[in-house]
Length: 205
Length: 205
DNA sequence: TGAAATAGAATGAACGATCATTCATTCTTC
DNA sequence: GAAGAATGAATGATCGTTCATTCTATTTCA
Image (tube, rainbow over the protein chains, first blue to last red):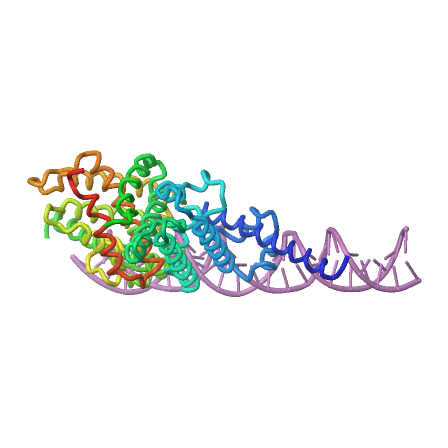
């Protein structure tokens, strides 16, 4: 075994352990919240000792920050994969599915709202969240403004910016609503969403 | 002093003390969050000893529940005061003002989002929130459906229900956005909001 | 090849801090 | 002096974090 192979194997393992911890932390934070979820819970979920976590993360809040960054990457990838034939209302509706109902690794509503609350208490989290949101909105607006031929929706720049902001608010709101009323009539939500989104996404007016 | 007067004076004082505690708790919860705000902080803010709080509230979570109920009452009163000449987009926009910018006792965004997150961890809070939201949406939809002559907007029942739900989501979303991006362009938010809401609030279509 | 040496991975008890809550005590008011 | 109001130190529990120790797997060398 060459030295490079050894180093690489170690790196792979380290990355896998970090991932293991992040997945466990996400589950615990979702279920109990940032402050109520203890490092002991996270360690138990990750099936390791509490002490070991500190080999891979400096602190509890470092874990939170890592989760935020990972979610940002996932969201950016989703936006990059948007194309003109996409059913936007349906996609928006889907991002508000509760944790149990989603197969992907995307942000679940509970974690998102938890993070939003924490953003105004912890400056570091606040900065990370602010930066992520700005990036996502800008990239989303760029897609809305791109021509149909280039896979966008062909909105004017001003309208694209406004629509991106309003849709971001709507997604936020749908996530909050999912938390506050888990048994809300989702079909009604979807129909209302489609109806009210239509005029916003029309290029001409 | 008659016995009734004595009893009444004691009640008034008790009520004032409870109010004092609730105001302090609201400030602390807003600043630090439910879990990070300690009873000692609340006591200090209320300018009383920690022990005294327990004369007026059974526990910390009893304080949280009391705040939720108070906020529900405030929101109901606001809805009851709606009339046909009201500028709805402006009113919605106003409910998302940060704590520092609002003079009334209305729900500030930070507290609202904090509560929403807590609703899916604490069943009692979840139930209170769910009930409150349902009541508010129903009453708001009733106003939207009332005729112009009766001070409403004259929407059809189906459209009123859909609009009430969508507006509730929008308000949720605007509050979250206020937390995540406190320095967001509020003028842009307002313009986008007005544009988006207009078709939703037209009786005919 | 096989035993000893080494390094990194993992453990979990222990620490100091902090928390919600209690209650014996003191203060205030009538 | 009696009764309610208020205090704040004490309690027990829990937390994030540390670290002396053990385990495991790889390397070294006879």
